[in-house]
Length: 440
Ligand code: FCB
Image (tube, rainbow, N blue to C red):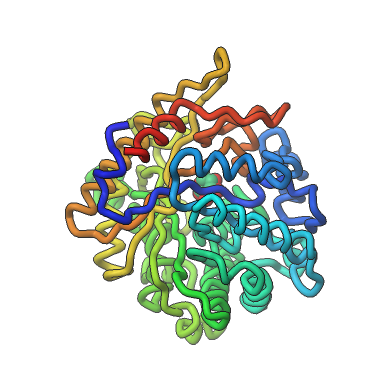
């Protein structure tokens, strides 16, 4: 790689990230059904109707996987806890085996010198709660707070950091407006409610974890750089609306206690009564801000209903997801989040990485595209640090090839290749490059 550990400030943390449903194997260990299981079982939602029943079988192979994290020289391992594994119906009954699993996993990280960074929710909502309206139901904030207390009551004493919800935009907009993720709705009213309740649940869980005496709590926001398709005022307006919906709504809610006007112009009629009174909870103080960054989007105006915009295919080189590679966007977001929202708090790049068309040849996986992607984004992080932004960590998505949601197992994001027939792990060339860089 172009960078070594010593090119970053002392104490800068390198990590890798995964999530529960994408790797564990949800069929094992007494986990309850989730909305991703039923979404995937509905034709047309997921490539090949694939689901997370087996995934990487991390549930049985976690020790080997933690050895891989430690073997690359990472400092932090970001993982998530499955609500339905811990509370199969989402409320009430606790699955002791599920809590035992996360307890052992955290101890396994500590034994290997890894800092455990937990995310409470990375998208697999228990079906019993989906039946009650899921994120559309305001009661979800309380249910989520109770889940936070149960799981953190067991592992919170040994975590290095914790965050409530991975990528609120995906939980809200992607899943309720675009319908690309479970529950697959395309409804503006459902969207408005889900977006607000996600924020309320975020704040409620932060308060619950503080109540347990936990520290180093943050939020993990996904940001996508929005570029107008041309120089017209209409394109500028559309790109600004995209930016408001995608990037500013959640940051603004959590850090400023307001929602952007451009979003309220479309969603206000559909927000739940009294939403303005929830910001005391939503702005529960955080200790750090996490940014997940992958790409940018070219945005143009559209004659259809609000938000009157459309995505346009861009000219930059693309990953196997079809996502443009745009490292400058990361530097821009780090500066902007520091200046406008987190204001002095440490910032961690909690996800960054790429899907590539990787395959094994003679027992090896050559993925120079991934190493180049990481190099360019790490250069962007270094520029932000030099400009005075307090970036304190950078975590690669992902440790393993895994269940890439609606794309099934086809999109390979891992530093480690997984053969989904045998479940054999093979570190790719990028894994070895990272290990060398982190040892220097
Ligand atoms: C992020 C998700 C993660 C994975 C990557 C590619 O939005 O947090 O689960 O899907 O994108």
